[in-house]
Amino acid sequence: MFVARLRQLRHDAETSLLIDNVEKSVQAIQGLLNALLDISRLEAGSMTPELCPYPLAELLQRLAADLSARADERGLSLRLRSTPLWVMSDPELLYRILLNLLANAIEYTHHGGVLVGFRQRGNCVRIEVWDTGIGIPERHRQEIFREFVQLDNPARDRTKGLGLGLAIVEGTARLLGHPLSLRSRPQRGSCFAIEVPIVAAQSLIRRRRVGRDVWNGQDLAGAAVLVIDDDQLSRDAMASLLTSWGCIVNSSDAVDNLETEQAARHVDIIVCDFRLPGNANGIVLIQRLRQLRGEEIPACLVSGDTDAELIAAAVAANFPLLHKPVRPARFHALVKQLIRMKRSAE
Image 1 (cartoon, rainbow, N blue to C red):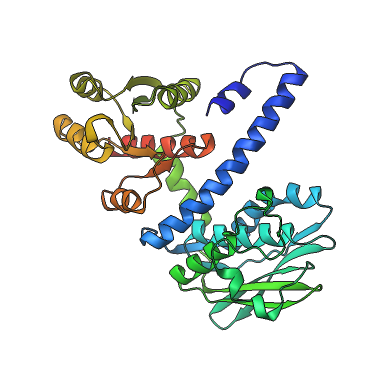
Image 2: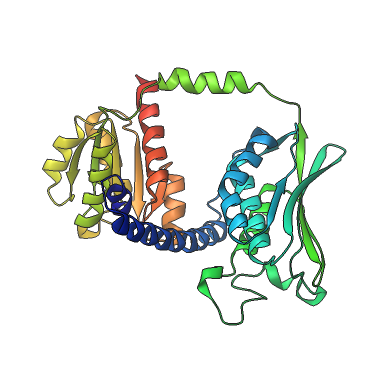
């Protein structure tokens, strides 16, 4: 969050290059942490799919935007064939499955390219990720879906990840009920495929219009946010970003309960750390502030704790949970979602 705020300021060329390198390092750390968190969520059983009709074309646009630069850096072609098909799945979980498969294909392909294609089979579509990479020997084809397994990384180079991508793919596909399969020839390439139910095309216009009506074209300017965190650096980072987005920010370390209660009387949303002083926790505090206010103030949790019980508790209490270090783009999107909830309730 501090890096994101720093980037908004003016700098000379040398300082800008340093910020670029710091940001790349932060993103690499975030990617590794997210992989560990996904494994934790799968093991805790706290991932709940939200199935809905979704156009594969939108999914392909996201994947192309996220991975084209990486393929170019490695001198590979990345082709994603277009399709008008709609599927019934959880858009975010399906996206993460394909993102992991494509990122893996790009990482282990040294020449040639990667292709995403489609084969319709009755009421399902088979989404196939082809590569011209190193291939996978038959004796390793079950092993690669285990956690921390990397076949082509004997030096344990952490720039190549932790070996969690395919474990996440297998667990998420199983959670969604989408069959996953693999074909491969050593030194010739591989094809990972996932089968997803097809549905009739829906109206994109209606779905987007509803989103605009709820939001009324407004951004975050003027939104009153209460940030509760006993870690001053985290509190300052969130407050700085929120202020730069036009929010009116009140912050608290939760030590002074009276001050926190007074601040909560005049806010639109609450952003609260989970672990607080005196064995308190954010779930209990938010629920108490809601009770004092007499209304369901939209709120989310942030935490550096990756314990599976915390993840399950947040899901049970219906609180969105972001893990530190919080990615600014995700933080911005979640704050917008909470403000949208507040304004639609009004």
